[in-house]
Every structure is written in C-alpha cells, then in structure tokens.
Amino acid sequence: MTSPTGEHLPPDIEQAVRAAAEQAAASAADVDRGARLPAEALKVIRDTGLLTAVAPVELGGAGLGPAALVTVAERLARGCGATAMIWAMHQAQLACLVRHHPDAPLTRRAVADRWLIASVTSERGVGGDLGSSLAGVGGGEGGSGGTRTLEKEGTTVSYGAHADAYLITARKSADAGAGGQVAVLATRDQTELVQTGEWDTLGMRGTCSPAFRLRASFDESQVLPVPFGEIAARTMVPLSHLLWAGVWSGLAAEAVHRAVSYVREKARSGAPALVPALAAAHAKLAGIRGQVDAAVRAAAPVLHAGQEPTLGLGIELNALKVGVSENAVETARLALQVCGMAGFAEPGPHSVARILRDTYSAPLMIGNGRLLAANAQSLLLAKGER
Image 1 (cartoon, helix red, strand yellow):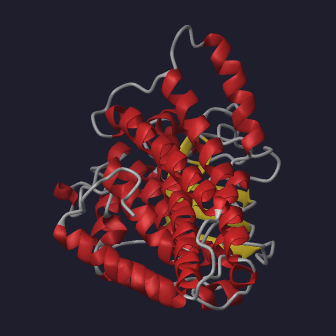
Image 2 (cartoon, helix red, strand yellow; image 1 turned 180 degrees about the horizontal axis):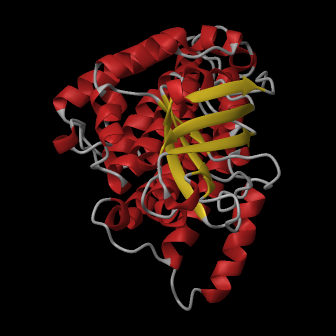
C-alpha cells in the first residue's frame, strides 16, 4: 500500500524508517504486554537521525516537510503504534523549538545531541484546554532575569520518565491571565518529576504516559520568546494533528493488510474470497488517506512557508482529527470482523487485537467532543472559508 500522501522518502531516510519499523514490529507485542517504553525501536530512531527529522538541515536535522513526516509516522505505526506516537509527539515539540527559538543554544543542543523531548501541556484543573494554564512561571522578580521556577501538575506526560527535556506550557507569570501562556524548555537535570498516577491502559501502553508533578528551575533564556498561543496555532496544533493522523492511518493500514492476508490464505484452502467487510475496511482506509492528504496540502503553507493560519485551516484540522480518529477505530473493527478469532487472538500474523486497542486511544487525544464544539462555533464565523 502507498503512503497517505504518496510521498517518496530520500534514500537515507527510507533506510532509517525501514530499520526502525522492523525493530518496532519485532518489539511491539512485548512493549504492549509490559506497558514499557519501546526502547529498542527508539534507539534505532535516535541512531539513524530520525529523531531530528523535522529539524532543518542547517541545524543538523533531516529537514523533512509535512508530507514526508506523515509518511514516516504511518510507516512506523505499521510496526508499533506506541513507537510511532512517541516519535510523532516528539517531532511536534522539536518543531516548536526549531521554528520559534532556533538560535537558542539549548535548541541547537537538542538537535545535535538528539534529545527526546516530552510535552507537558496537560494540567489538572483546566479540563483539557490547551490554551489555559494554572501553573505560572516564577522568579526573576523586579525584571532582574536570572533563574525562573515552575511547578505543574501534568495529567498525562507521555514518555516523561524517559525524556531528555520537557516543553512545558504555563502562564508567563504567576499573576498573568490563564491564557497568557508561554512555553519553556527545561532539561532533565533541571527538572524534578514525581509520578502521581499509573499507566495501565487499554491501548498505546508503550507511550508510558502517567500523571506527574513537575518542578523545574531554569534560566530566563529557556522561555520561548513567542507567546504560546502563536506557537500552538502556527506549529504545535497543525503538526500534531497531521502526525497523529499519520499514526492512526498506519494502524488502519496494517489492520487492512492483515485482513487481506487472512482472506488470501483462506482462499488458497478453498474458502470463499468474497468478504464484504474487507471491502468496507478498505473503503474506510481510502477515506482516511484522502482526508490526510487534503489536510497536508492545506497545512503546508503554514508549516512550510510561514503563512498565517486561517480559521478555515483550523476547521479542517479539527475535522481531520475527528474523522481519522473515528474511522481508524472502525477500520480496525472491520478487519477484526474479517479475521474472526485469528484477529481476536493476541499472537499470530492476523491478530488485530493490539491495533484495535491502540486505535481506541485516538478519539480521546484531545476529546472529539471538544473539537466538534469548536468547529460548530467556528463554522458560524467562517464566512465562506472551508
């Protein structure tokens, strides 16, 4: 099957993706069973330079554009959804740094040393609203600069215990409004983490995303100079939606692949090959890929050429997240219907159990109800924008 964008990767990236996806697939069952970090696949990703895929060449990265990044996300997800999601979330954090704080010494170190960067945007008490924070940056009283401090209750901090650095959202000061946010890059040695929750979940178990209380002390220069609202609109939100959709597209594609393989094997033994659910799963996958491709083309001017994000693009990206997250679940369910007990069982080449469980996380990552409510309001203001 082709990628959702039809993108051909450069030979060195193609080789790296193949190696990482093979290792991800080899470790996926054990990662899922133990709810552990996919350390083996992440080592390949780090060693081959895939960890800095989004960083521009002049900073030492691969300089991949949105279409290529989505292709990588899908390819990795076909091996292991958790591996692909960790890679995708990291790319979104790194993109915020290289686009909005490119000259900072820590940004250059993050690329050169291939840091794994975790996001600390969730927070207890804000109801999942990315645009609000309770925690505020402290220190630097009287405009003296110097050391700043921050304490935050993160509700889900993916791969937080294993990250080299954290991109943290907070109010720019303790007395700033909830929406007066900044983003802070804090290194692991500047950060104290106290785990306050467990991660024993239905799917995406290898992302290792429990709740943490985080305390950080850092230099004023580690606060990104651009307001977080602008960073979110220009980089974090559009790239996250695209890459998450690439991951879910990959899970759906792998489920269809296993269903096709199952039907072919049965047909060789004389069983009927006319299975309507297989065609229905393929149709769902085609719809996913069409929506991803359209969204990549719509977002590219903002992510690649620096154009202003529009209300219409926000509507389309929210629709992408809702549509792909729900259709990936349905695609995997249809594949399970095709494969029957062979798909229901955990082991075996036709199992879709882990894939289906992983897709069930998709509608929950920024709840679809929140995005649909936002789109309902935005559509009334769009004035002809799609």
